[in-house]
Length: 424
Image (tube, rainbow, N blue to C red):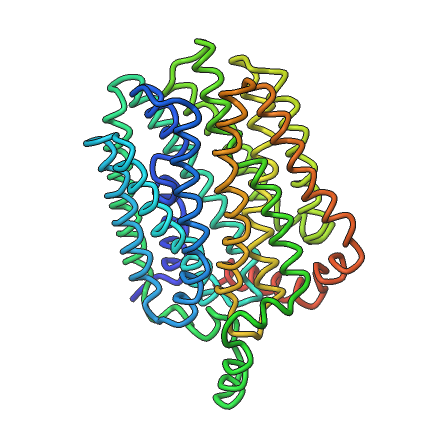
């Protein structure tokens, strides 16, 4: 007999270990390539290729998650492929090998987000989603902290080869965690936002939700995606560029300092994700996302002024606040906006696609600015670009506030689920 909470523990373990898998070797890629003679512009360009691939893959990945009952298989295949694509970089770091690795990592990694969101929604239904997804993100950011700390120490002690070995271990644990989630604990109708519908209603919803028409008709969803695109255009390049700036100034060991930047941000993200659901109940989704959009311009100014070893603390703390709150609020808001359409995971994929457009362009923009005008200018421009998300969020605040309301009935139902789980 499976213990009642075992599926939830397996889901949280999956989120913990996939943190080090989803983005490959992540921020360590920049300093790894820099150590092999790459320039900032080349590093930014190859990262942008991966970002474009992720952008193109997320919507089809979301549609696949909605359509299939093999969501765990998607997670397993994506975990294996992403890990192998990262490990190949240790064998060869030529331009086309790195580019191919980043494309494969992006495509397979793009499937993990909608798949895990779908599995979570299928396990706990809409009423329990906000709380459980918050727990998922606490585990995910904790996994990033542990993975980054171990990568930094292993890289400093044994070289970059140990970082790749650790990526392989986390990949294997990701696969094992996915397998440990029982197949029959996932309601696949609930996973796509159709729980409680009769067979006839199911077909009716499916007909009206076909394609992307239901998403294009959701003005709040499109505004959310556009705001996130501008946010990530400014945000995505800051972490790798800040590591490169410190290393170029000879103010830190490449592996150790890169790990420090990740650990500081992820520790703040753990706290932000832990309190995100409570903050959502108090000020709503609109208010929480407003906080995240305010944090990034400030981060750009601080990064430009503090290219020093201690500057990592304020720079990455601001990153942790923005990314930590968004990691919970954005998927939960998409579920609320699209519940009943049968296309919740397509919605997750579409939002990720649009925000990945900004994230894909960010490294190339940041790399060109850093190489031609210096790192400080790059940080200021990136922070300035991100103010577009803040302007959009404020300009359409009236309609967005209404769409982002947290209804008291859903809040009370969610509390009931939490109580039942604790006493079950």
